[in-house]
Length: 237
Image 1 (cartoon, rainbow, N blue to C red):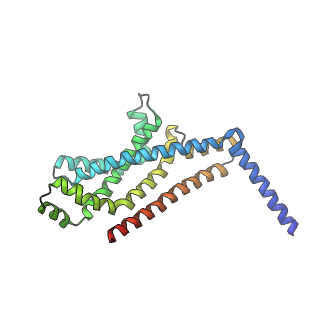
Image 2: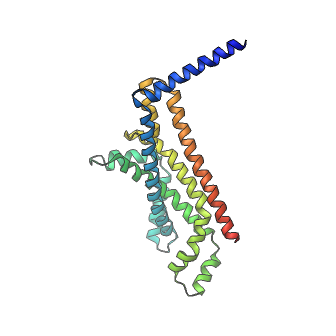
């Protein structure tokens, strides 16, 4: 019985080694994952920066007393949140930039940045509204202008409130970038799929990509928890 179990384990290990070599070492196929990971991180980081820029701007527009700015922000947020991100990506690539020779990475950054901006705007707006109105009134009573009150009193408190939601938005964005293969951009998911197409083995490359995504999102979540604890300690002190 023990010899059969040993033989079974030995056979499984040999098969595993063979699959590992076939999927990652032959022709240096692991580079598809490495290079794909670089693209995924690059698109995610620059897209969230663009999304935050757009999001803060739209949030201020929506809170502005100027009606046209409110209407523009509301229309933007409703349209973007009401349509699939993959459709937005395809429209930007094939329709808006269809006749232009432009980097696919830049197209992906623009598409995901525009999409993220709508969600960040609602996060920021909610964070600003969560700050007690008395804080604004206190700032104005001290002689601060509206801009100074927002910059020095309201926004710092709002950022603390919305920080976890912003990190969650980045995590969602990181996972959403897996669809950039629709425009033939070789990100992490596409890299795994290329390996699959060459080895006819979907298990190892796709599971490897899933594990990498899991490690990235877990690291971001842990980092968020650490920073959030430090922010709470700072408030208590």
